[in-house]
Amino acid sequence: MIDWREHGVVVTGGAGFLGSHVVDALRRRGCASIAVPRSADIDLRDRQAIHRLFETTRPAVVFHLAATVGGIGANRAEPGRFFYDNAVMGIEIVEAARRHGIAKLVMVGTACSYPRDAEVPVREDALWDGYPEPTNAPYGIAKRALIVQCQAYRRQYGLDAIVVVPTNLYGPRDHFDLDAGHVIPALIRRCVEARERGDAEVRCWGSGAPSRDFLYVEDAAEGLVQAAERYDAPEPVNLGTGRETTIRDLAATIARLTRYDGALAWDLAYPDGQPRRALDATRAERAFGFRARTPLDEGLRRTVDWYERLGTNAVAREAAP
Image (cartoon, rainbow, N blue to C red; front, side, top):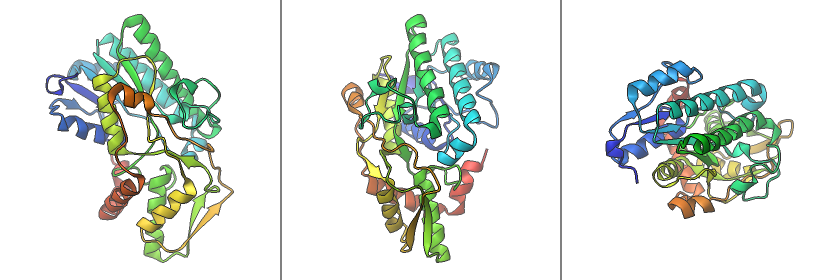
């Protein structure tokens, strides 16, 4: 077990959505030395910049959460950037961890790495059974390659690098951009703004038929810290609920929670993405006791409340450096 009071930690992406909750979880454990590099100050694609970061902060534990991410629209618009940024950042972080003798590296993977048609709920050993959903394959393949790198470095250099794969995350501090954001924050913003304008309908992407496994961000953050404390194996490990919710049902719940009483119009001109996605988190429960605690309805209510309290500041937050 890691004594967080005695170890310095670097959390890349620690000012972002998931990362800020990981920082909170570490602080609750008494971790006083947490370095959060900001994108305005350091380019994590730059090898020398990462070396300077590690030389300055001298961490024992590194959480690599920084990523270039977005919804279906963003992935389709910039597949090259999504591949390059995520692959290069991860490759350089793992290499720097080896060179600097990092005691524990926690690499965050993505459910987008799994094959499009994997059996649901998806187990970790399905990773190589097929190609990812094409709309986000460049991002998923970049993250898949980092799993191989972590396993190779463990085998050759003894680097204690683990890969934790969360399912679709949501919660307070999410990114509420309508074009680049994920489905939950985008739907919340659309419904709130439609209610305020008195719109008769909210237009939603696709058919609403696909299903997803939605994990509340605070549960995911706890799972990542638990994995750092108790997991030491080359195989990736999932964090999820194992429960599927269709996008159509999700949208109806968000409309109810935002008090929007207009129609939900489904636009078939936009893609659905992967037909089904839910992760089997049995390995995480057995290895370090992880279990999702927050029901979807409760997590959505908290997210809506947070967004409505902050209003436009919730949108501006993610755009800030």
